Length: 108
Image (cartoon, rainbow, N blue to C red; front, side, top):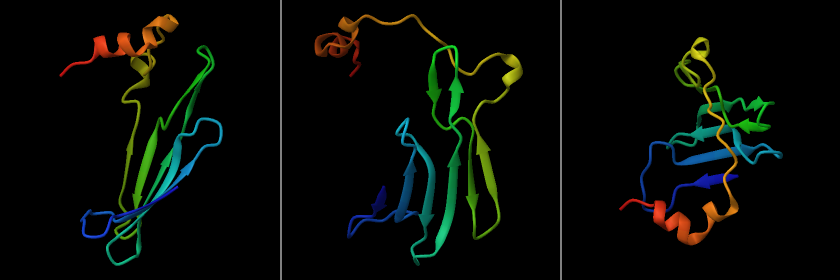
C-alpha cells in the first residue's frame, strides 16, 4: 500500500510504502522517503505466533533503520523474563460487539 502526502500539507515523511502480510493483513515492512524523494527509513515488523491462543500478535518486535545516518531503533517486548507480553482473556460473547454495547463502553 502506498501513502503520499496530500498537496499543500507537510510531514517529515511525505511518502511511505507499506507491505502487508497476506495472512494477518498487518504491515510487516515499510519504506519512507524524505522531502527530496530519497529513500530514508525502512521498518520491519516481525509478527509473533502465539500457539496457545491461537493468534498472531503483529510486529513484535519491530526495527526501524535510518538509511541516511546508519542509525536504527528496535522496540517490542521489554523483558520476556517477566512473563508473556500478551494476556489471553476469556472469549467474549457476540453481544459484547453490538453497536449499543460498544457505545456504552465509549468515553467522551
